[in-house]
Length: 480
Image 1 (cartoon, rainbow, N blue to C red):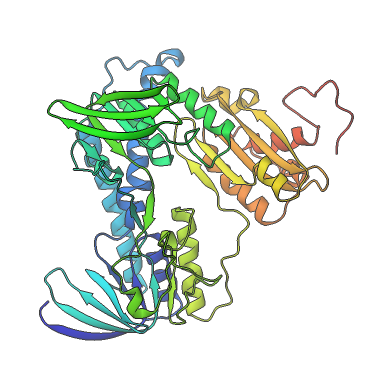
Image 2: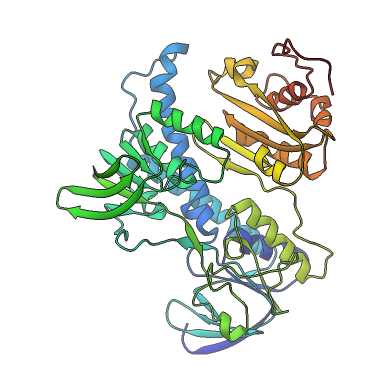
């Protein structure tokens, strides 16, 4: 592609991740002429370097771990089971490619044009597109959507090199299991991928600055995962700050300071995962007049995902936390429908959160503490997996589900769970919360047996003091 060309679009989308491609598909369905610009691969971080590849690797390591630990107890013998990581990576890459091809097919089906390269605003109605070969196009648009996602935060002194010091993107491409791994950051990515490598055979240590891993989640959920990691041999250092990194010829040394003072931790490889920042730089936003928060880098939007510039919208990780693909999908769809003149808003009570560790963690709605701050009279009830038939049949009795309800009104306020398949029934909890369900509504809903989802119904019955599969408290005095 040589020289400079021009084309027009009713909608120009910058970024082909969850928010961008969802918006392009929806706008195409509604009859818009769409041009989508993506610098790398369709699907964004989620499909290529995050959600999908990490879950593929987690699944592989989970199979290995189950064979080694559960197998002998339930009669499944697989002596000498090993993980060939290079083969696993090839399988993971094939999964990603198949999903990526699927996105391309969907975009083609609605007539969207995909351009590979860089896009930069030159004004509130135009984008300069640069192809990999240096050629340029001017794209004149009626509306544009910024869906450029986020990129890893880089800590000075802890820069990645793609080999011994890696970020999540680079770790997912490694074809060998290190003997030892330090994880700097105990958030979702650090816990998920740290656990994956621990199951694959690495000696893992997680270093987290905050008082608990998974900062922001309820402490009792974090405690359950900390205990599970400990049983795997993973060392968790919370309240610990990384001071410096020494890259020696035979390994890495991380100087940290924690509750016990200064310490030197050594390992073969370091995984740095201390958060992400919105990818809002170098997009020509000043030329377009789009306002950006100078501190966070997030782009401000209204309930229809419109920026301060009437012709330009934004969605996904670039606009606000939580940085979750399912939130991005919905924001992209809302933006597309708003651009097409549909009555739509991003107005949701809850955004479910799932951590794909072993055990899984799901959190939907308010915690007890947040409910108190909001003026409710919260009360909790916790149902143990140990009283769940499916959990016993699946050799997965560790874990529990708790319901937070308002003691005055009986309204459901939150659902939080740790255990097998917790993420699979988070959507039911989200639907109940979106519809303003009472705890009794959940309890009266017939759940299929035997399933893990019965924990939700059982916890609701317990909250009502009408338990079915756990004993009623001796001091109970009737239901609510």
